[in-house]
Length: 169
Image 1 (cartoon, one colour):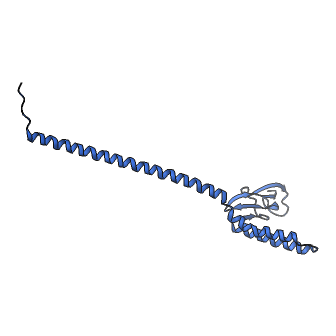
Image 2 (cartoon, rainbow, N blue to C red):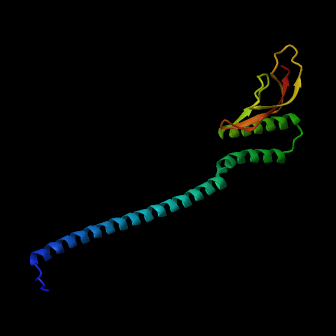
Image 3 (tube, rainbow, N blue to C red):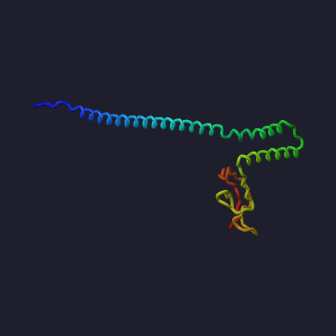
């Protein structure tokens, strides 16, 4: 069997093909490594975002009422001053209580709390809780005749329904 000597032109073509395949494979490997690094970076960013969000939620839960409480402190101060002052005049004591209540209502309103005082209005089961029913008499039925306890809503969400007496329909 006779062997033929290698053809130098054929060898250079084989080297060129191999080096092109090697370059393509190397580029593909580089692309995959970059994609892996990007994926790891994104996973780390997502984990940091999750941790930051959890910290923010915890801080909001922990300190969310800070502004409200700061606004309520002057009312507490007013009540304390009222208790420290000797009161022989019940009219002045009542006036002081009314002023303090007005301060409280203004502060709560500034924080989104709205009073539900439905006397004389149609009964709304979404906002009112009927405690009893009375005969309608001369007025129309289904009207709130008396309010036992005011209701409250916070930014249009019911906190406590008004406890009411309703005229019979």
